[in-house]
Image (cartoon, rainbow, N blue to C red):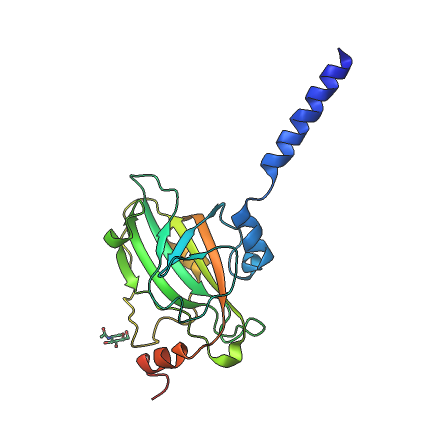
Length: 207
Ligand SMILES: *[C@@H]1O[C@H](CO)[C@@H](O)[C@H](O)[C@H]1NC(C)=O
């Protein structure tokens, strides 16, 4: 009888420990130091991200700017009546070691009903990684926040021909300003390739 009780206690403890463990997304955000670099807490859910050609983002691996130049498909667990915000941001500008102008905003869509991205309001259209060669390996961070509801956003609308407004963005600050809750995220890393030259021309950074 006593043995049985002891076994039940041990099983109970083991189950409890497992549920207290970090999720994959939480581990990833801590391992790649996105927490604490730009976020205080990691998301629980790993955001599904797929680029053209069936390229699936997961767990921080490296992709090229060419592979990730077009807006990806994204998916997360959404409540049907809730509204969401998605952000892609680069904390490593100009480099991870010296992120003097952290963060660089790559994508910002608000008021997304459920996961219907096409029905969201675009404050900053998607642009892929564009760090210069000297940056080395950088992190590209996606985060999805649940909004309080459909909200008014008093923000400038950015575009991909002018760098104005992209630099010195704060994901944490943005989420705080609108009282949003982090629900999902993912990360890939990248370094310069030839495609970046084209983007720099598009932004008028080089002629
Ligand atoms: C792009 O944004 C800049 C800075 O806000 C603005 O001056 C410019 O008119 C915009 N261009 C287009 C095509 O919207």
